[in-house]
Picture 1 (cartoon, rainbow, N blue to C red):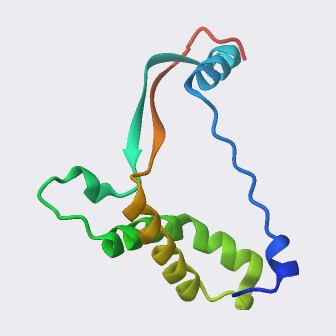
Picture 2 (picture 1 turned 60 degrees about the vertical axis):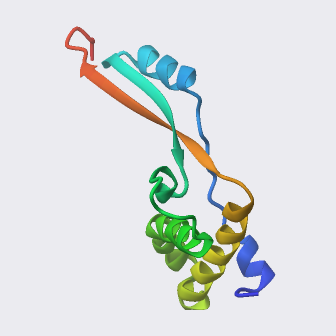
Picture 3 (picture 1 turned 90 degrees about the vertical axis):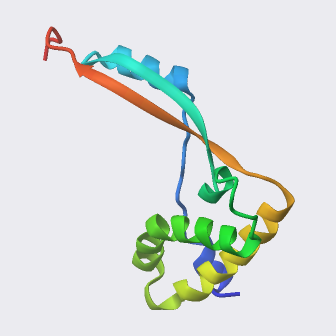
Length: 124
C-alpha cells in the first residue's frame, strides 16, 4: 500500500450527515434564525451525468469525482501524513476505483439548500 497500516489507522475523520428534519429542529431550537426555505435535492457524483449530449466515459467520470474529493481531502491528508503520502498516486488510484464503480452504478448524494432570516426578536 501507499502507507504502513499503523500510520493509515492513525487517520480518523468522523463525518456525520444529519437529515433535513434534524437540521430544521436544531435551527428552530437555537432560535437565532427563521427558516425561510429549505430544499433537499439529489446531486450526481458525476456532474457530467446530467448532460445528455455527452457519452459516458468512466475514466473521465472517475477523475472528475476524484478531483472533487481531492479538493477538500488533500490538505487534511498532507497535514496528517506529511511526506509519507503521495497524493498524486493516491488520487489516481481513487479515480480508477471510482471509474469502475460509476461504470456499474450511478451514485448521488443529498444536498440541503437553506435560506435563513436573522431572527431580530431572539434574546441574546
